[in-house]
Image (cartoon, rainbow, N blue to C red):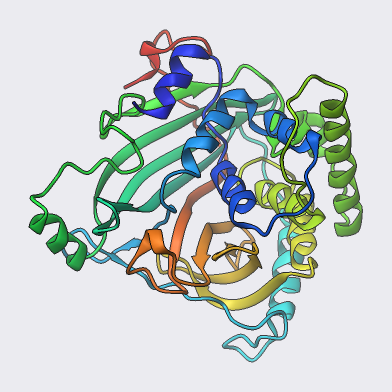
Length: 388
C-alpha cells in the first residue's frame, strides 16, 4: 500500500511532509551514532507531525533517493553534478575566492527590496532515484511541489506525481531484459493511490505557523528573525531547545539520536532559504550562518542536476552522501537542494561517488499576485475532493 494512503485514511488533516524531512531522516540513519536521548524521538513529532514520522519510517527503509537532469535518451538522466571539492579557499572561475563570491551574493540579497504582493510561491521539481528488482537497475521517480503562503502564514501545498522510469539507457536495457516490469518508483505496491501519476494532490494547511524542522514560527516571528548570522544561530538554537524541553515534559516515547548543533542549523537554515517568506536580510544572514559551519565547504561555479551554475554550500553528513544547497549568484535565491554521494552505495549500484542522489530543483520562488486554485470542496479535512 502507498504509505501516504495510510496517513490520508487516519489523519486527513495532516499536511504533506515538508521538503527536507526525508533527508533529515536519512541523515539520522546513516550518520555515525551519537548518544541516545529519550527526548529526540519525540522532537520528530514537533518537526513534522506524527503522520510524517510514518513517512520517515517508510522512506529510510527503501533504497536511497535521488535526482537527475534529462538527457533525452531513452528516459535516462545525465549525472552532471560533482563534489564541489575544497572548502572556502576554493577559487571561482573569475579568480575570486568562493568566500568572496558568497559575501557579494549575501550583500546583494540583504539589500534587495521585495514588493509586497498577495502570496508567496515556491515551485520545485523533485527527482528521486532508487533501485528496482533487488538492484537489477535504477529508476527515477519524478514529481513536482508548489508551496503557497500568504501574509498570515502557509496556505497549501500542491504535490504532483509525474512518473517513474529507468534511469539510464543501460538501466532501460536491464529493465527490458527483465520483462519490462511495472515501475513503482517509491510506492511499495505500485498503486500510487495517494498521488496517482499524472495527477495533483492539494494539501490545504489549517495552521498559520511555519514549521522549520522543529522550530515553529508565526508569520510575525518569521519577519522579526535576527539579521545577524550569529544572532540568528542563537535564536534557532534557543527555539530548538525550547521545543526539545516541551517534548521532555510530555509523554513522548523514549529513544533516538541527538542531532548536532550543525544538524539543527543546517536543517532550519536551508528551510529559511528555500521554503518560507523570510525577509531578504534574514535570508542573507541564513546564507552566512550556513557558510560559517565548520563542516561546510563553499565552492563557486557548481552545477545542479538541471545544469545551472551557482554557489554551492556542501555539508558532509557522516554517511555515504553530502547535503548541499546551490545558490543563484545574481539573486541569492536557491537553485537546488541536493544529496551527493561521497562513496558508492550498494542500493544505488551504478551511481558513482559525486553523482547526485536526490534533488529538489527550485524553478520559481518569491511573491506573486497569483493564488492557489484549490479544487471545490478541498479543505484541510477533505480527502477525495483534494485530488485533481
